[in-house]
Length: 248
Ligand code: CA
Image (cartoon, protein in one colour):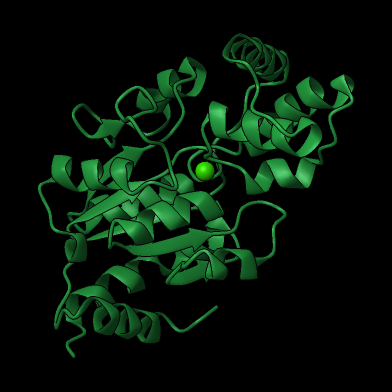
């Protein structure tokens, strides 16, 4: 892990800002608040692999956060040299959701509740920014993370036109929180989500909760990478305090 203060200084010089202030945290859901990625990966793999379309579980981790259209067209173009017809794409996605629902419900990510509690204790406004529209986990949020993501501080796949890696969802998150880019942090676990946070101009923390190499997250532009949620939860207070105090 890169030193926290060094990563903040690098961000500030890249963005040309002399001070920062951590007023909001824009937080992804799958793979951050819930250990749900194995289920998404399994859902995709069980849908696509039986069709004889070449794919691997690892690439579904790398494609996390991508829209249905983008994911399916990437596989179709590689296998057949053309996009999937829309009705085929919709049917495949319906099958993926069906496979997902057959799996045991994803648990809360260990230590994510402690991370949220630390943010709230530092008066950091928490905002959910997920590409997901699947109701199952969204309905669990109020129970598992009480008061953290009340409306309007909840952006889902229904709210945006362009999914990650477009900056749109995170720009919308900044707007809902009423803060500028240098007054927030993004908390992500996937390369496309990291790209979206960076493109929105926000200091982007990657928490590597899956099997991918941390280098993939740095290559996507992450300002700092933590190797697990418990690791990040132990450092989040230090991160906020350093952001609020460093001047360049
Ligand atoms: Ca994610």
